[in-house]
Image (cartoon, rainbow, N blue to C red; front, side):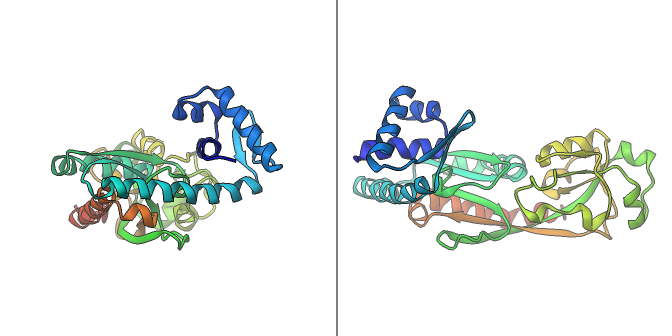
Length: 296
């Protein structure tokens, strides 16, 4: 077993597709497939479960992945330190975040960062699932609620508020004056068991027993459904409060607050460009607290 074989193994494990791994490595898919088979034969274990949807690690594959990833991180850190790259205010930083926060808060507030640090480029990855830092999907992850992985560097980013919103068009046809009126309304919510955080399960507490008229794993899709007049939804204030077509429903009766947390690998935290963006995000949420808490 050599490092080239491990590099190919790592890329397939991260991307879960031979073709994607091949493009990243600059080789053809047949070469990737052959090297994976050779690695499995040399180790006498099956590293991947193969299907039309992709390559997924077996239990033995997960063990090798953890060891190979540690080797890769050590090598990358050593090279970067030797070359002084970790100390430079340049390079690329990948931020994995929730869909709405990435699209409607982080991205619009990067103009100032770009002016301050023109040599640092940022990839914003608004995902509908948890970011896999251990697979190097991102340098920084922003999650809802405190992450349970204690091997990471973790810090609270901010609180943010959510409220019940409806379009003005919907409210012209539906009178909502008390909490009890909510069970008589059309609702838009998450698809049960497919939301990536139990902190997004609001509806049963607000309107028990209601079956949503429309459900989506995407909060942006929910926002668009509310905007079109389909019904009510619980939306983050940073997403919905600036939309003149929407109104808060029962503002004094419903108050939901959640937390965003920052997370990164210990080695990544020591990289200058990652630390710069980390600090920028912390300062940004403090500056924009009124927007996040729906007080603007």
